[in-house]
Image 1 (spheres, helix red, strand yellow):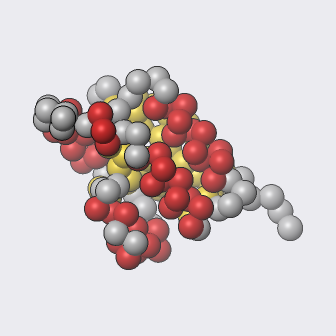
Image 2 (cartoon, one colour):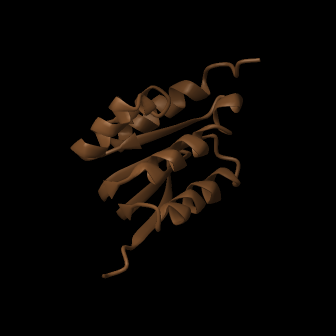
Image 3 (tube, rainbow, N blue to C red):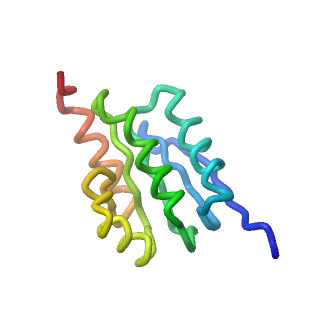
Length: 125
């Protein structure tokens, strides 16, 4: 059996980090996915966009990683958002209602616009 790989790289677009991910997110690669998100968060960014255009599959460990990554961002008015999810990932985000916590956008530009809009709102006390 071939080892499933996950690759990622981050870029800053209009002051918002966008994490581009490729491969499959499963029990074996979820730690790498978690580390990639954490590497961005520790730099002080509160809004993170995850581009899933090249992710073919994500199992429950990937969804759990998303939920845990979003938790420290919310109290500081931050957000985690997703773009370019395939139909099966979008369906699971909706079924599990994770999409109410981690919004799904059609494009990176839409997600960045939403992040900027959220940055203008006061942080809840």
